[in-house]
Structure formats: C-alpha cells, structure tokens
Amino acid sequence: MKASINQTLIESGEKERLKEMLRNKLIECGWRDQLKAYCKEVVRRKGLKHVTVDDLVTEITPKGRELVPDDVKKELLHRIRAFLAQQKELTSDKIPY
Amino acid sequence: MVDSELLGMFDIENETPKSETRSPEEDVLEELVDELSLGLCIEMHRSCKIGMFKIEEEDDEALKDFKIVDQPGLDVFGQPPLKKHLECVCPSCHRNLAASRFAPHLAKCMGMGRNSSRLASKRLASNTGKLDSDEDDERDIDWTYALQPTRTRRMKKEKPVVTTLKKSKTAKFGKNGDIPSASSTNSDGSGNGASSVKVGSSGTPMYDTLSLEDRKRLLLTTCGVISEHTKKMCTKSLRCPQHTEEQRQSVRRYILGLETDDRVRVRPDGTVIDPDDIQVDIDTYEDGDGQALRDSLSRLRQYETSSSGNPSPTDSTSTTYSNDGQTKKRKKGPKLTQRKKKRPPPLRLVQSPGGHGDVTQYDIANG
Image 1 (tube, rainbow over the protein chains, first blue to last red):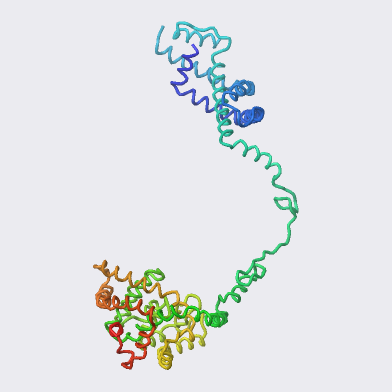
Image 2 (image 1 turned 120 degrees about the horizontal axis):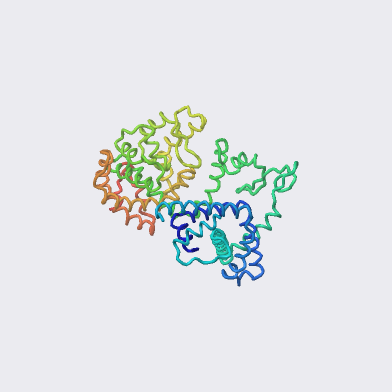
C-alpha cells in the first residue's frame, strides 16, 4: 500500500515536485535555519572531531519532524491527497470494475 | 472518507493492505521531511569535516562584532570621519610628501618631466664620470665596435650589415614593430625623415650610421630632441611644443658635430676616448648594449641562414646584401675576443693614416 503510493509518486515525478515545494516552504518558514542551529548544537556537544553522520541523523530527524510548521504540513497533505485522488480517477478510467 | 476511498483504491492494487496508524499522506510527508533533514545532516557533517563549520561559526560571532554601523556622523566602522591626507614616501629621497604634491616632486627629484630633464642630465653626467673608470675595459671594446660602422658607413657594401644588425637588435628589444621596413628604406638611402628616426630611436649610436646628409635631412623634418629617459629622438615636427628651440639646437649641434668630435678625440693620444664625456645618452646605451650587440650578431647569423623568403622586397634586398656582410662579421667575431686580451689593435686601426672612410673591417681583421 505504502510502497504502491510511493511508486505512483515517483513514477509520475510528483515526488520530486513535492520535495522541491516542501524544501522551499521549509526554507521560507525558517525550519532549515532552526534545524541547522540545532545541528550546530549537537556538533558542539559531540565535539567537532567525533561527530558522525549517524549521530546527526538520529538526533536531527525527530527534531526535524516536530519542527515542521502545521500550515506547511497541512498544505502538503492537501496536495498529496489531491494528487492521489487524481491518480485514482485515472486508474478507475483505465480499469473498469 | 477520502482516506477510505484511497485505501480502497490501493486495496485493489495491493492484495495485502497494511493497517496503518497514520494516513499514507502523512507517511509520504514524513518521508519527505526526513529526506530533507537527512540532506541537512549530511551537509552539516561535511562542513564539519571540511572545516567549514568552524569558519561559519566564527563568522557568526564576527558578524556581531563588525556589524555595519548606521548612525549619523559615523562611517560604517563606527569611527568619526577624520581629515587625513595621504602621504607618499619618495623612492628617491625617502621624504614624506602629501599625495597631491607627489607627482611634481617626483618630476624634480627623479628627473622626470620636461623642465627637469636638463637638471637630471647634469646629474647623470656627473655620476657617469666615476662609472667610466670602473668599466673602462668593457667600454673600450664596445666603443671600438660601435665606432667601426661609423668609419665604414660610406662604404656601400657595409651599410646593409649595419642595418640588418639594427634590425635584429630592435627585433630583440621589440620596441618598434615596423623597424625592418624602416631600416631597409634607410639602407636604400631613400628613407624619409620619420622612418630613419625610428631606426635610430632604439639608441643614439644609430645616428652614427647615418651619413651627414641623412642627418641633415632628418633634422630638417623632425624635432629630433633626444629624450633623457627613452634615449629616443622626438619624431614630431619642427615646431613640436614639448621641446624648446634651445634643445633642438643643441641636439643639432651634437648630431651634426659628433663625427668631427670623435676624430679629434681619437687621434692625439692614440686611445679611444669615450665620447660619453660629451654626451651621456650614448654612453649609457652602449654600455649595456655591447653584449646585446654580440648577441644580435649571432642571432643575425641564425636569422639569415633560416630566412629564405621575405615578405617585402626591400627586406629581401637588405638580407642579400647582408650575406656578404656576414662574412665580415664572422671575421669580426674572433677579432673581438682578441681585442679583449690586448688593446693595441683597435688603436692601430684608429690611427691608421689611410683615412677613416677607407679602413674597412676586413682590413682591420687582417692587420
């Protein structure tokens, strides 16, 4: 189910478009800067020499998720839904049942 | 309801639907966010390892310290405007000068500019007195070498040698692009004033090679004042505003009277006296040029063996001439080295009673 959605998104190129949109929105709303600041904090805590990508990912990913503003989230969800609905119409046209 | 529809749709496609706590859109969104934060993580990690992290961090702090000040009465650094006039140190006399006075001072101190050229030439003349005693030996060689073309310049055969010599020399220096053609017209004896000036412009000794008539013609058409620094003749018209009538006259006296001066100086004591006692320009030029002349000689040989097709007809004539001159030059090469060891030969040459015009280099080489 999840994999099939993913596949549709990737095949249609919508995923890239969504990602680009999300990136712009997150930069606009300051999410990136916030996360970067947090990143710096983590690096400082761990030490510049000893920090690894894994450390950063485990620390940053949850923080990144929670930092996403609600309105951005809402808009993205709306857009994904619209796309999926559109896809459904197309597929239902193709495959009559 | 939309969700259920979607689920239904994907149920058709996937036989085994998963029961998700979150809607698939959220999953997708989360995935996107994770990808972005992963990108950020990797970027940060890279900057850490590269060393950019440190720089950026310092930059942040530095930015606070060096924020642009935006207050009336202060400049962007937060300093009140000062009336500060720039000062320059003269490279010649090491004095501090206001920048506005620097250029006029340089003109006076270093002898640049029109009015000070005479002053500077005086100073140079006094300086070269002691230089002469130091480098007398070398100078002698150079001068005997330079004098020979003078003596033999009326020989038609010899002339092209001189001009091609000049050609190669000027080509080496790369001062004037159109020298070859100018020198060839000169060798034909039909060159107008301007072109022959160009030939001579790479050094005063060039005038030696011109006949008296040529010099007269040249000086009738051009200003001809020899610059203190470039050692070139002024090629402007007779009423050129850069030079005074006085300067022009002195140059004419010098150039037209140089020949007789040389003879007088050479004969009585039997030694070649450097004419730089009279004129500084020649001396300074020849001094550095002796080696260059010899270099150009060897270059000339190479050039003439290699050059078969010349673009301009005048050029080709001069090179054919110079072929028989070349044999003379070759004989001259070893002779020069001989002279370095013992001085008498050039003196004998100078004193020879046969008259200056008759003595060719060929004879000298044999004698």
